[in-house]
Image 1 (cartoon, rainbow, N blue to C red):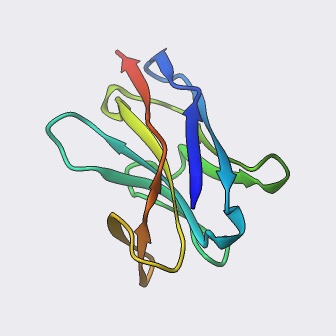
Image 2 (tube, rainbow, N blue to C red):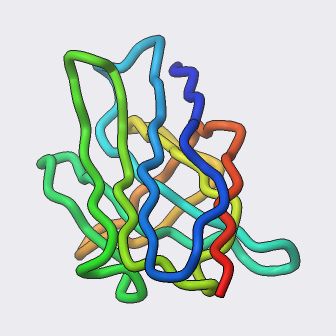
Length: 129
């Protein structure tokens, strides 16, 4: 089990950048994949960036070339660098992790299906035009 806390959200103008951080504590060694999701009220949760069990990053088509996911094992942290932001990126962003067991949210990444069972509380990102 891990505990995850996001930070770094805020308001930015269109074209700007933000860097989200996620501090992770607990049984980090058992986690096999990591991700960032976002959700707008009334819409389904959307996966935006992931690191799979081979430490390979994957991105949703809507953020390719603009977002970068990374991990810092020494700091037990997960990051999401977001550039060229647009109002369509406005959402609550969540970091998440999964181990080899079932999770609360399942998503295809590449050729495999990954379950995410550990979530942060979310951080609001607002992009104004």
